[in-house]
Image (cartoon, rainbow, N blue to C red; front, side, top):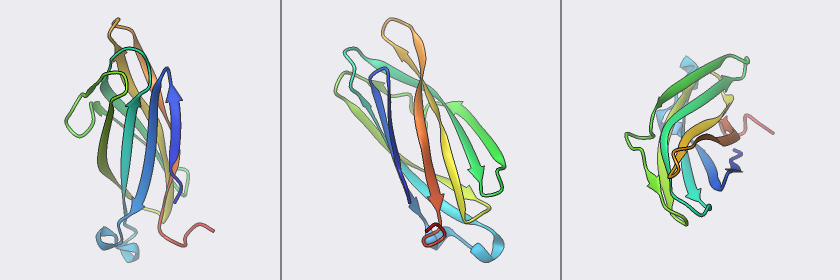
Length: 129
């Protein structure tokens, strides 16, 4: 599986996906994935993650948009040099799919911006050559 890394205005977002075979049932078109995200403030001033927007695309090109406040129930404040790491999950109805999106951040100056999450692959092992 392929992860991703992207930096927007000093906020680096790295994603590592993992297939969860024990929670998947391919015979019923259910593939479960986890992904670990590390958000690092490489900028010079604090930023707060306030919300998220995920775009999940299955192998048929069907998109699902997921929006919400914070991540895993938190809206972390990242001072320069600090990182926040969390793991979450995503069910798929095809053996392969992708995710990408953005985190809505607010700097200490009150300026809001979207920190990009570059596309990464969610795949059952051996489904992608």
